[in-house]
Image (tube, rainbow, N blue to C red; front, side, top):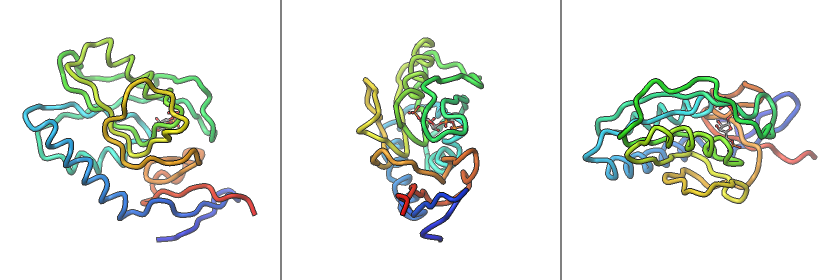
Length: 182
Ligand code: PRP
């Protein structure tokens, strides 16, 4: 695995390795398996960023579960949120009375997950929890907990394992952070 990559002239250094991510995903899944052992939760992935974490997480889930996806966009191709969350694809599942676990790759400003929670709560689920691989705790403005957090990270620009740089590099197996300019 490369410890350093350069994309469009920007240098990125390794932040979380494939093995670190794999181990943490297993731990989160074990907690979810225990917490939901008599339930059949619906995992809702927020596209696009969550798709790899989502696939890895649900493959560690041993209880019965369902999956669905919703597509939001707030960043476009930029490194900083536009501040406007747009719903690009709605849910197909019936949320009412169900146990919902929303799966995110990252909670950054908190705008997307806040938007998502409002949307889901309108349908009166039995319960609502969030699993996010990454949480920028110092900048996220949310009035509810992120129940399953992979890693709390500082407010730095990170890519890979689902997270894009101008829509590319989502397929990297590890997570990299933008290195300071020399
Ligand atoms: C990213 C990421 C989260 C959101 C987090 O999505 O996947 O959904 O931003 O940021 P926030 O907490 O500041 O709202 P993005 O809008 O870039 O779309 P993508 O998932 O297709 O990359």
